[in-house]
Image (cartoon, rainbow, N blue to C red):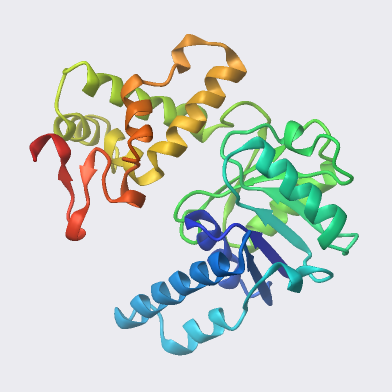
Length: 291
């Protein structure tokens, strides 16, 4: 089988690696709006494999086997892919335009499956007016290592498509969970409000950054506290999901914390920008309220 991953950012790279590491997939097309973006994503994948080889996590032959499957550029996917996984920005119009262009102008394989890695948006709305049905195939970061895939059916997603994506997920070594469409699905419906509440707790001066994270790690046995996890997810993503939950439900319990909005406006997004609730300069991790 052959897969095209649309979007060469952090999630796209991880999804592409998950497919490259599966023997059932012989080709992985990594694509983005510009070829240089796709090439940059592939360069980061190569660097990641180099690090694994240096740590003797995998051997060079295995790394070469995975990398040999990759190709970049939209032109190469005109007739080939059996599956397209969209991992573009979490913006409804961008996703709709992406699928419309792929279906009408690029992918000619009539049997191709079209899936979105959206973390919270409506599959029904993304697929509205498209010539083919789509399905949600929500991976979790890092996508090549995390076991869960949420498989989300919209109002117009046929049952046989759900089964096919479930089967593909199993081939990838994942554990698929079928989810009925709802804002945030399962994981983000529960997890992102937790992070948001942690931000409220900090902004109200109830405890400091390290105290909040330590309390949740030791008191709830969480591997990572909510503020550190928000940094890892990306505070822009946290805000986008909270806004989706709030707008879709109208429930005030999903109101984004004002401090979250302020940090996103200030480009303090967490690990991806080097600073969020923690400062990640020089490979460290220091709470920003301790600097």
